[in-house]
Image (cartoon, rainbow, N blue to C red; front, side, top):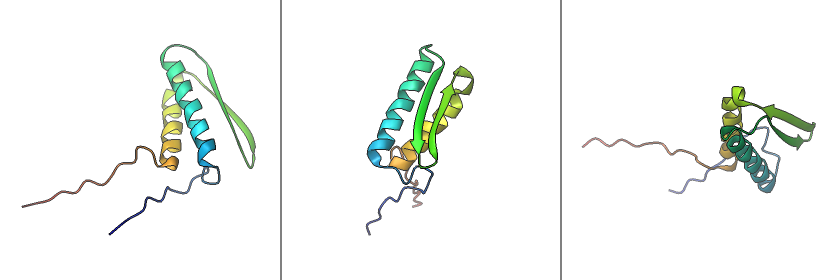
Length: 88
């Protein structure tokens, strides 16, 4: 039986994959810049409700990680498969 991966519905669902990949690249670059000591880092994106901008510092590194994970999940990147356990 074939099953297809359906990404979860998020606030990013109405954006194209190309746009999401651009946002992901920018967020990953910002994360790298924070880790090597360049700070603060600004990331901006636009939606139907208008443009938004967020500035990240070392203090909110976990928030940036969450943003990256959310974009990856929407794109279907790094999704985990359920582990199957077999008893014999």
